[in-house]
Amino acid sequence: AAKRPYFMQVVQPYVNQDWKALLQVSTHWVKTEPETAESWFYLAMAEYETQDFANALAHCKKAWDLRQEHG
Image (tube, rainbow, N blue to C red):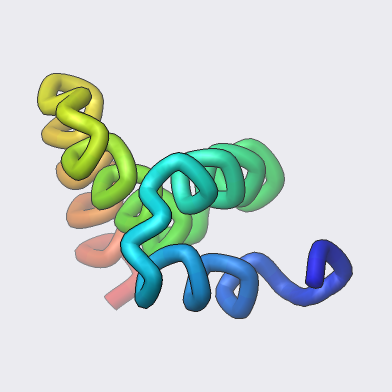
């Protein structure tokens, strides 16, 4: 599973609401592909669900900004 693209790796933790696993995968994704809006979105979701609200808000904004830039 770790050899799959990140966009595939986040699906199972997201569906299963395994926020710690999603946090781990999305953190790696952001480090690997910082210009991908989806990586920031999933990181923000994991942070929100683990009650890291300040980072969730900042990273949600980052995802939004990237999405606006790349249409």
